[in-house]
Image 1 (cartoon, helix red, strand yellow):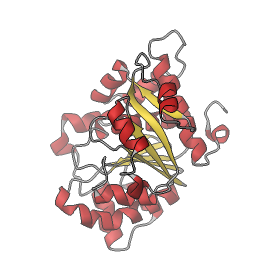
Image 2 (cartoon, rainbow, N blue to C red):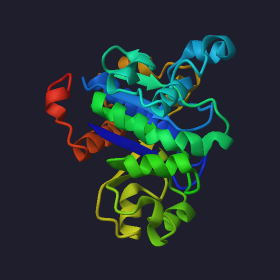
Image 3 (tube, rainbow, N blue to C red):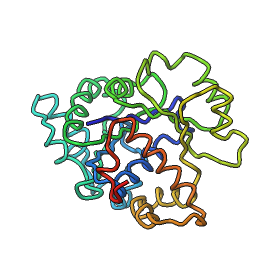
Length: 277
């Protein structure tokens, strides 16, 4: 139904993968939508680490990237044999009938253009099977896979942080306009620190930004869950977290971001919510 690209202007600083991970876990544990999460980074993305413990412990033996994931689907796409239902067959089920992970490519950057030729068809077919497709793309403007996915996207999540230099580049300059064009978008601040002077309210005022700004707060327990491949367990364990818990602000903000994304892509949250709201 809808493809959402998570993109940032600067590599390694704005928490793009962490935001993708948090939103996919939030949707998977709280909504009954069929959701696919993937990325366009080269083989060693940290997105898989958040979900696949075995893969991190025995990466060389467990997964043959050519038999599963993006590379396998690319072969079908090149031979014009790719169908929407086939996408699921080459994913890892993270939460049955709710959240699947499509492993990224093992190809090197030299194969970028070749993969870019078919990635449009791959995610177009995924979009026909899944209610929501979340893609963590490479930062910046030069990567061809990034450009292709953003062109296909129904919504772009702009991943920023509280660094004023980065904020000024995005809000005040036009260097990203050619890439983003008139795509629907929302802004999220990764690794957010609410004690900073650069709160999202102050940022909105500083740059006269009228739409909502969302956050994924800095959270040590989420970082540990990511590192030790237990993100889903972390979200399930905290579904009924109390307001006095140290991690309440993190979950409250991630849920606010999740609601914002689902609303923008036209998903009926009441229909798909486990709790009917």
